[in-house]
Amino acid sequence: MKRHRSTASPWNPFTQRSRGTCRRGESELRHIATQFGTMYGSFIRSGDPGSAWPRFDADDGAIMWLGHTVEPKEHLLDKEWNTFVRADVENVNLLEKRLALNCRASLNVRSRAFAEAFTNR
Image (cartoon, rainbow, N blue to C red; front, side, top):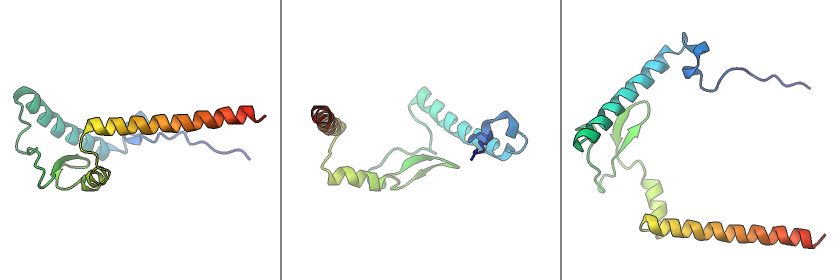
């Protein structure tokens, strides 16, 4: 059975074919990009992105959300942060070390399995 392949792009708001039907998506994207660009440009020039982007405070955990809106959201990454806390990962260096050890262990297991598969033939 022959399957039909759609020629439609998954990125319709950004294709020439859809320009007439996706003006709202383009204008929304342009608006968000402008907001972020203004804040980032201010940060580059002065070290301060402006009042719309507050300084990080560990108590409320507010980080900048870049989605349909550009706004600070509190406790957005609490679930992820708690994962690191439960795993007793206190800094990036420790995280990198643990990830490297896990990768090496996984590669060792795979290489042993590969070697066994060829020696048992």
